[in-house]
Amino acid sequence: MYAILQHGGHQYRVASGDRILVDRIPVEVGSTVTLESVLLIGDGAETDVAKGSPVEASVTATVIAHRRGRKIRVFTYKPKKRHRRTLGYRSQLTELRIDDVAHGKAGEKPKAAAKPRKAAVPAKAEAVVDAPAIDEQAPEAKPAAKKSAAANKPAADKPAAAKPRAPRAKKDPADGA
Image 1 (cartoon, rainbow, N blue to C red):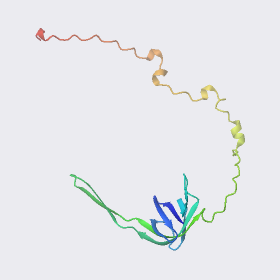
Image 2: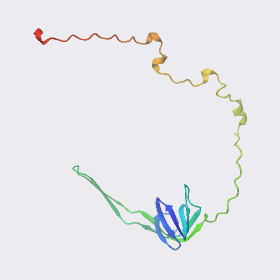
Image 3: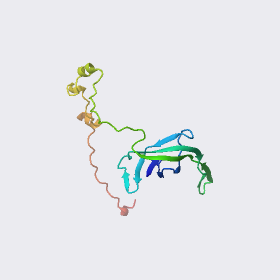
């Protein structure tokens, strides 16, 4: 039986007994970890694929060691500007040994039928009853629609429309001036 699980933005194909390196998990060495974001689980001819949500399966693994990844050098520069910069990076990793790949979540009992929820009642029901509804409020208390500043001015305050200008007479170069 094998599974494809997702952890830290990466996908891993695992089977019982495999060793994988994943992003650092803050647990003690030797402890057991359950990885539940399983995307696919397969056993010979049968496969169970997740559609929209992870498959109801879990992978149990034991933490073997905490390690650091290989060094990565990042060199940046801007040509003709005398700007050079070197950065280094080593990822923090955890080595896991896969113990078990199982259908259903680890240690989970079958779910009972869900009970319908009751409607929530406000704690201060009388305060809510005494408050008038928005429709019952006076019209001046309702929020007014936004109007432009020009629409609120009286007609007398508005400037008069500009008069059209007469076209300028073109100068004749033969006039001599």
